[in-house]
Length: 147
Image (cartoon, rainbow, N blue to C red; front, side, top):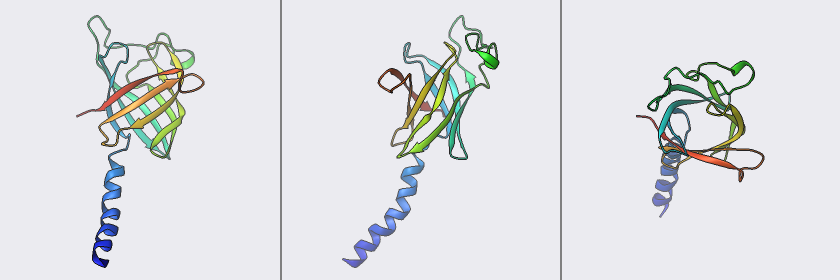
């Protein structure tokens, strides 16, 4: 019985880090438009000093889209800046596997929303929720880990 306990104790120390690694939001993600269901871009998420940030690495243009899109609806210093390379997620911190407390910019409408990101348990998708005020007043997208 003692050896069984040791086995489970040692296994938990070995397996727990592997399980939590799969839930990391870091990496490159393919975004899916929640309104059209179309693939739209690749976003790279990184954690720097405990803060999750995201930058658009590439756009997947739809027919008729300009592949060199500018954020024409953004305000301030982001107005008419290239969408590729733009920081669209910042200020999120992790608590109990959920990243929140930061903001997300939607380059399509130029608006900034509060943001919450929840990685799936297998680490292959993210639920990205943008909202005003409280989370109930918002929309969610599912992003998928890029190959």
